[in-house]
Amino acid sequence: MTDADKIRRAGPLTYRGSAIPQTTTDQRLLDRRGPTDWVHTDPWRVLRIQSEFVEGFGLLSELGRAVSVFGSARIKPGSPYYELGTEVGSLLAQAGYVVVTGGGPGLMEAANKGAAEAGGSSVGLGIELPFEQSLNEFVDTGVTFRYFFVRKTMFVKYSQAFVVLPGGFGTLDELFEAITLVQTRKVTRFPVVLIGTEFWGGLVEWIRGRLLEEGVISPEDPELIHLTDDPAEAVAVIDKAHADMAREKEERAAAEALAREGDGE
Ligand SMILES: C/C(=C\CNc1ncnc2c1ncn2[C@@H]1O[C@H](COP(=O)(O)O)[C@@H](O)[C@H]1O)CO
Image 1 (cartoon, protein in one colour):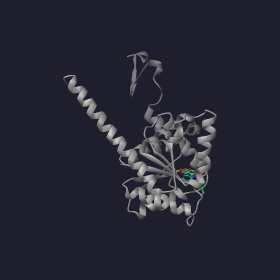
Image 2: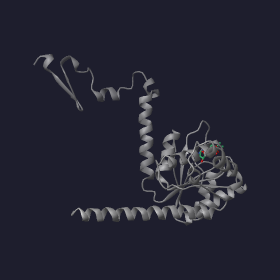
Image 3: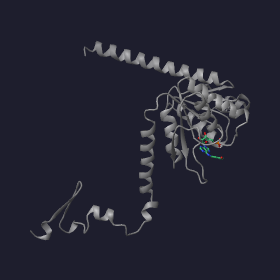
Image 4: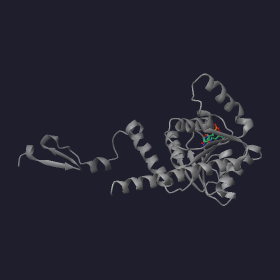
C-alpha cells in the first residue's frame, strides 16, 4: 500500500493520504503544551454557556410548582420590607410553592428565610459578581451562574409567577423582562405581582398614564401587573391563575379527545 492509499478514521471523519494528521485527537487532547489563549475565546465561552443551561435544567426540571421572588439586594433585616419579604416567602411555601430567588442578601434572603420558617423549600439562583458573595444561609438548593441571561431563563422556565418586592435596577430589570415576555406572549398566564403600593405606586401610575397616553403600550397592558400591599392577596392571584391554567389545559385535552373520537381514531 502506498502512502497515498492510507486511511485514518477520526470519529466521524475520514482522512486519506497526505490529509492524515500527524497526531491523533487523543494525543492532542493529552498534550498540555501549546498556546492557552483559546480558553478566552467566544467558541469556548459558548460551551460554558451551554454547560450552565445543562446544570440549570438538570437542577430545576423536577422542581414542581414554583414562584420567583425578586427584590433589593440591599434592604437589611429589620426593615419593614424585609418583614414583608419574609411573609411572602412563608405564605408561598404554605401554599405549596417552591420559592425561587436570586439567592443573595436583602429581600432575596428574606423570601428564602420565610420559606424555611414555614417548612417549605427554596432555591437560590446566584450570580457570579465582581465581588465575593455566597448564597444566603436559607437557600436549600442553589446554583451560581456566570451569565445573567442564562440565570434569567431559569427564573422564567421554572416558575409559574413572579412576585416583585421593592428594589433597584436589578429588580426593575427582572420586572420588565417578565412583563415584556407576557406582553409579547412568550409566556402565557404568568401573574406578575408587585408588592408595596407606596414604593411601586409612582411607577404604576406612570405606566397607566404616560405610557398609555403616548400609545407606547396597549390599553390592556397595565393589567399585566397586579399591585398590592397584601402578601396573601399576591398568593391568591397566583393560585387563581394556576387554577385557571389547569382548567384550560383540561378543557383543551377534552376537546382534543372529542375531536379524535370524531375522526374515528
Ligand atoms: C449589591 C449587593 C449584592 C448583590 N448580590 C446579588 N446577588 C444575587 N442576585 C442579585 C444581586 N444583586 C442583584 N441581584 C438580582 O437583581 C435583583 C436585586 O437587584 P437590586 O438592584 O438590588 O434591586 C434580585 O432579584 C436578584 O435576582 C450588596 O450586598
